[in-house]
Length: 307
Image 1 (cartoon, rainbow, N blue to C red):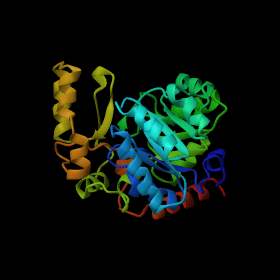
Image 2: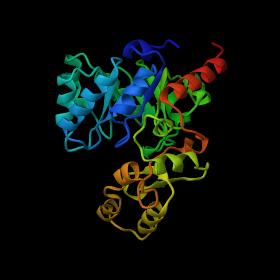
Image 3: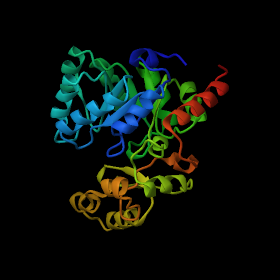
Image 4: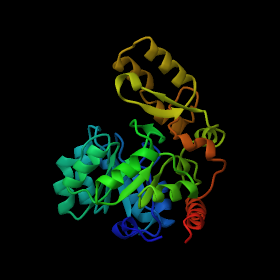
């Protein structure tokens, strides 16, 4: 399936793996890239040297293109931005902010820059500043979210910009890919389904929580302070919502979740940890390799799109 995104990134399939904190490390990124998509290393809050090591380890596992997701709120964002140039990374996606201050440096290094956007206004601004494409991410996705749904955001962004649009949020099979293309996207970004891949280092408790999830198991916390996060319901989300209703400060709520994503991903604490996952968790029923996932999704999408 040839699109402007597959040509731009030098990949076989129009599928990008989300840059999920603690999840998107070198094993997963390399596996997705080897399978024909674009694997991403999630910079999250990691220092530049940690990201450098991850990039080098991924390159030992694949000679296909890999990218890095820069979380712009990270105190290490500037270091990570420089490491990406030094290590010859070809693609950068950005989240949680505006990457304008790094655009000139990245573009001079020949890096393809793809910001994640949650509004038409930010998509248009990113195009003006030289972005090569944008990821239009709807609120169905896991982790930090905006307010627009994928169904409404993607066509509006596609109408507003001339650069290619990648759809994200609520996509986990070939039907989602076909729907995204109908809405005007030229690729999709997928996170939650890759969490349960065989190559993912995520603790089996976390994977099983996703595999066993029902359609109604998704919860959003943090709306009262303007930082909504989608994860699967558990003791932590119930406590968080209770404290929100009591009017607790942002700092008190942040303290509650400190280190809980790491605890869930690496230690398997799915009771008090933060089990970030999108609303498609209820559609995921098995663990597969990244290659099996991508081939299954592309075959289904191809039939639906009549290719």
